[in-house]
Length: 433
Ligand code: F0G
View (cartoon, rainbow, N blue to C red):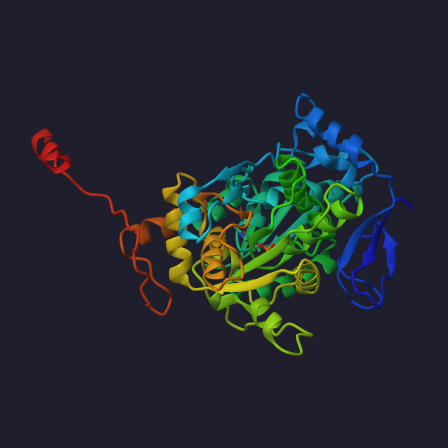
């Protein structure tokens, strides 16, 4: 068989047909990943993938399906629904580099995606698999971006999207997207981790296909973030790839992509992964620091204004732990103040991002100060979401009104409050000098 689902647990490695609608190993409960046996010729593919950038075919224009030889789980390309996801830029940011203690820094900005986050890379794959399995209804629990993306892709594909979100805990930009893209939206009185457990039960009972990042096909799509990054860098790996960690699907996807790229001979070494968590939602940070480091201890009441990564019990931690460890990577955590200030600095570069994404720069600043990342290192940080996802946070920060639920205030270190002026040319001219 050319493609299969394989249990990720080293002691199990049970195999399942690629067409099974399952999310965990039936034998041991472990996470699943897609595995392939197709022949790969890196020299030919590097050329073919470049040529596809000139093509007008939809699947060639997709920054995910352009790399379809490395995600060959489908039996037919007819299943593919693309909104031209991926194709996100590498943006040099000298000001952010200086703030982060680096000589240079490049952002790969996944906020340029059709629904404004990296979730689109994975969702086009998850939805293609849902169609292939003949599913009608799809569901996810989300801190906002997965739901926005799932709503868009499943509506575009003619599927019926059902979204479960923690009531009052996602940004309006994201909630608005889910409503606009036509998803049935359920706001549950519980946190992300509790709702995920609930949705898993409901998905089984009601025959609904689950499109959270526990779905292995989402992970396949998110691999292309790294594949495209290497393509854009002419296959020269950076020293570090820095990304925020929430449910840890992206960490799993990046690690798998890098392993496969090296196995097939596209790159000759694997960059180190640096995963950054918000201090109030940092179970993965705690895990790698515990001496016995064997199992993740969930954070019961995760807290952070970066609501995208407000997750206490990340599903993909076993995969993420493997990928971080085998890349010689690190896990860091940053405070709310550090995230807010780093975000403002990314804004001052003319780039901008949502709060969770800014954890990357805050983490870099900390890791260079500690001597973990060298000043001269070649670093790519992944900005996971668009600046417009959470305008409320931005307005509050710049006007000195951003605070934690317990009332602790965030300083507007780089605050830029608007000024109200009279409709009077003289007075405005005086003000502007
Ligand atoms: N950054 C953003 C903007 C996100 O939306 C998420 C996750 C992450 C980082 C963390 O990525 O979970 O792969 O470690 N958002 C999910 C959601 C959980 O429901 O939209 P991760």
